[in-house]
Amino acid sequence: MKQCRRITLWIMCLTLLSSSTGCWNYGEVDKLSTVAGIAIDKGEDDKIVLTVELVDPTGGNDSMHTGSQLITLTGYTIFDIVRRIITESGTKLYWAHAKSLIMSEEIARSGAAKVIDWYIRDTETRSDIHVLISGEKTAKEILDSKEKVSDPLSYRIEDILKNEKNVSASPVMELWDFVDTINTPGISSILPVIYLKDNNGRETASINGLAVFDMDRMLGKMDYLQTKYVLMLRNELEGGVVALGGYDRPPGISLEIFSNKTKVKPVIVDGEVQIQVQTHTVMAVDEVLQKVDFYTEKGRVEVEELAEDTMEAEMMKVIQYAQQKYKQDVFGFGRIIHERMPKQWKGLEADWDERFSQLKVTVESKVIIKNTASSIKPILIEEDDK
Image (cartoon, rainbow, N blue to C red; front, side, top):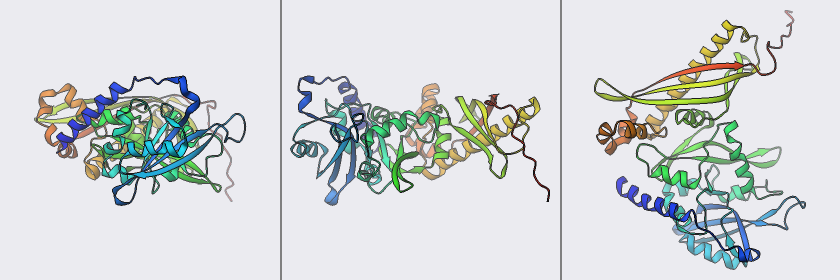
């Protein structure tokens, strides 16, 4: 069954690649409505609810911004709805500038491929659109949030994702990434999750955590901390913070990640394939909440070792969580076995989900603290002994 689904999705992938270079005639640009974003929900009687966010150049608060408007229609297929939206907007839709495609969890759990098929096939859409899962009940309420005060929310979502490498709280996935991963043996798909957050009475979009997929079907979610170490194990971590302790929990140090390199090596031990993971992370001390010696050679080494222990423990926790909770190889260990041990992979591929759940993995971290930002020693405050 899974193999049949994979063949179908391969066809979708090839269609995506063949259509991603298509061009559009700009001669009628004044007769178009620009689509900024899309939300897909499930309606009654197995219908699809499609919401498009259209750019409204006259709707902004000032001359430096544009506004937006939403159009929502229901139907049995995406293409049918898209065509009917033309009658609602009064103009043809221009899809090439769409920045985000948000699916509800209900849609994602029933199979994402069915609702993205049209977007992949159409020659006027682009495969570099960001794909996200709504952490709210519906995808529409994300686009319909109260945050929209100037530019379209979909453009704001793109800005958040561009800065994601500084946080590493969620993956960044474009449509072609998602489809390609679905069709790659030995790795399970993931997508970022977007929520609405109350900020002093005003709703703001917040992207953190990830959704775990089996092929194109969502199984569940992981939080932002788990996501950081998923990205580290996938060698996709570009930045972020590792906290050692806290305000009242020594050592109370925050380390900023400057760079990370993860090496994954499949080995055979006692006739079984195992995985060895090694990470090399360069960091800086950016915050000190306790009286800690991190500025001498001895103290720095102790902090490095504590960071290594922390990262190794967190990586093992997220590996075991993926193995026990979902049986999904979100780290791509199977893909690496496929590439480096093709003979062994032939015996593992057919039931990789089960094999992955029992796979033995060892992790080893190496942390290098290069500097301590602008201050050498921590701020010391004399405490009253009374």
